[in-house]
Length: 103
Length: 301
Image 1 (cartoon, rainbow over the protein chains, first blue to last red):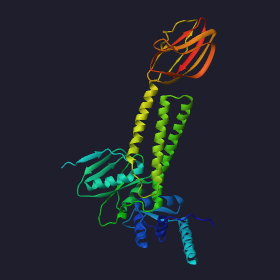
Image 2: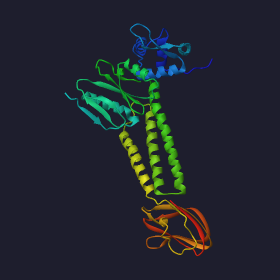
Image 3: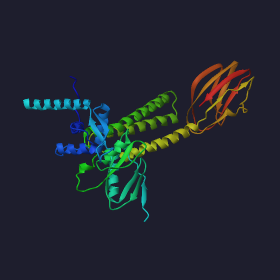
Image 4: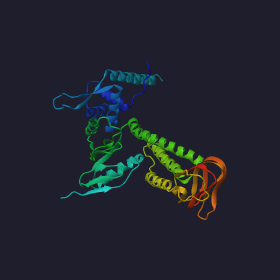
């Protein structure tokens, strides 16, 4: 298995927030704050850069919302590659945690 | 009631953009709201009673719609962009909100990415400037003169200022030393403008001509060739290439206003490049003397 680079906190939380379904930038930000108890915030510059880079990597894609009231709203959706990247990162984090418990 | 506008002509160095944000925030508190930010000027409108907080971003935007939407989602209003990729945003100030609500970069990686984006460009330009400095420095060894020396200095100074800015932008400490930032920006522009103007002026003041008179024989300064007299307008090193050939030895001479020779060669066949003359300002004349047919070519610069 190839060793992957550790993910930045922002990348990690964005992918995590998309795991259960597509969401827009604001939704991702709110969910991140909620999940982390306000510890992690994702500012607009960070959000634009991270989503742009992850789209280039093929981890997420942009779709247009068809929900009533949210038509033509930009949503981000996790791709299979993104799900895989998230899984790998979680495995890495879990291993790190286990290592800490062993010592 | 007519609205009141003002334009401030204050330039900020890219590596000092936090200072620009601070100044915009302060102006907003005093009732001056940003309409258009620029590299050399900033336009405000008087609008007391509101207060904004500002942020600056630097990047190449691939999707402007997505970019503006991403900022709007978090309450940022897009103000404008400069031609070179700086983007201005503002958010209504709410004292109830924590300070983090006015940050647009919330992790070290994205901050580094933004700073690195500018630093890479500056590094690229810095390297090009360094190459120019080296090119003229090499010329300075083979043909030293004032304009060349000036070009070396201009390119070297610009290169150092830019690379210094690059290093500041890359440095990670949250509170970068801002000391002398506007001084360095002033140096940068002064050197470009004054250096370029002085360099072009000095270069154009030098005589540039080629003369190759053909004659059976002469024994006088040839006044009929208009290039035969020339003027040196400032003391410096000047160079010329000389080639001449005749059956008998001929004399090539450059004399100053007093008729004293500053250069003289008497030979039947002669060819030399980059002959260096250190000349004070004044009028000079090229004289030839030869009793037989000859061929001569002189390129002066």
